[in-house]
Image (cartoon, rainbow, N blue to C red; front, side, top):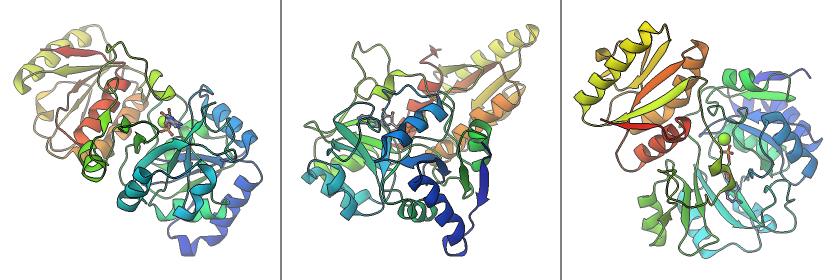
Length: 349
Ligand code: AMP
Ligand code: MG
């Protein structure tokens, strides 16, 4: 299959391209498209054959459900049993935006789209190209991140092409994703609601609207003895090809420890990488050192993380050490992705 890549600068100047992308979805094909979080791999959410194609293109296990993307509140009642009060409040506050809500699904949504579950994950993105595309596609676009399963989520069209060239009909190139990290996922089918994936809409922000909101205990540790609530949480995610280890402790101790390890790896002729911050990056002697930005700027870390992980792959890095990120809010989202990418390998120094 030839994958067509179309650059979209402004929606109103590229109406033909967006219409063409919408027609592909209506005909049962797949189109990758930009959103404010990461690029999505879109198919018709109400067509079981389209969802099966998404799993195939991604190489994703079919019990890992997809997120259904909509463009307006009028579209919601048709795909859920009923819209809970909590859902109305959160939609008012945070949609369009980087928040995914899980509700009981209606019969209109095929089980292929929800990984066999009776619940459906729904999001209304804010990106202008995403909204125009979903509208052109009929209003319900199922889309996981547009990476091959297990790889870091793509934050630009070139990264989508690395993973999906020849596997899908079209990629809409809308430039770099503004946020760079996947949406917050909150499960509204339980009381109190539970955060299944942290993101830019933080626990604190959700609590301000709903009162009590819990965090799934498996988000930051893999030894809680609990089965993960979202099927996707059990799979290794976001991983670079090299081994990734997170080092936790006081700043100086972390730098010293990592440098000793790097020296050892150099003797073994292994290519090394480091993930650090502007404050510390100059102190590391790695083959490929990368800063995520200033330590206080969690949004910058969120935006740059997946690009950096892919750069390690492009450079053939075999072993990566990362500083850890301990703050609240968006920092937690960054740390959650790092832990998954590292397969929870953490060294305390
Ligand atoms: P991705 O689109 O690649 O960011 O992955 C979508 C994420 O949403 C996966 O981790 C899924 O497990 C999660 N998800 C989607 N639908 C549901 C659902 N009905 N219940 C729980 N988690 C879901
Ligand atoms: Mg994903």
